[in-house]
Amino acid sequence: MKPEDYPEIRSWVEGVRGDVDSIDFLTQHSSLAVWLAAAQVFWPDFKEVGGCVLWSRVYNENNFETWREHLNGDLGRIEATLNQLKLWQVIDCEDTAEDNRALQGVAEALSRCWSAALMNSFPDKRFDVRVVNTDDGPIVTFSTLR
Image 1 (cartoon, helix red, strand yellow):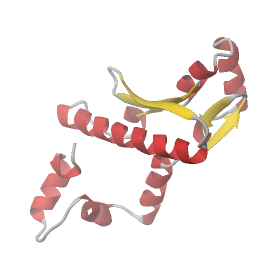
Image 2 (cartoon, helix red, strand yellow):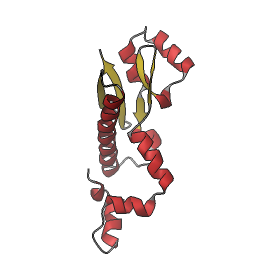
Image 3 (cartoon, one colour):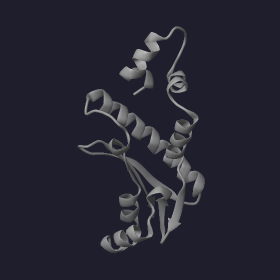
């Protein structure tokens, strides 16, 4: 979904004179702090722990050990379980067709960015970065290809 197709942005663009787009929408509706936080989501930090590559945000030693035991040390399953961003939990939206399309678009953009960030951080590894579609909405996750 193009940002200009989303109703809130489309309405704003139609109400403004001149040639404007989604960047102009962000300029009018977001602070530097919002841009900085979004940049961190789209290009996150990672860490290697116990043979796993993890999104730094989700790493907690006790939780990692619990999942390692529960998943019998299966590194790929541990990564796929911990490295999740459930978009409906962090983005305020409604259960409408337009919001669902928009969430899917964000998820797809995130997965492409995460893939690039992982390749940049770990050039000798390959990753499976994917969007998992659930009844609640999309989840972006990744695991190392072994």
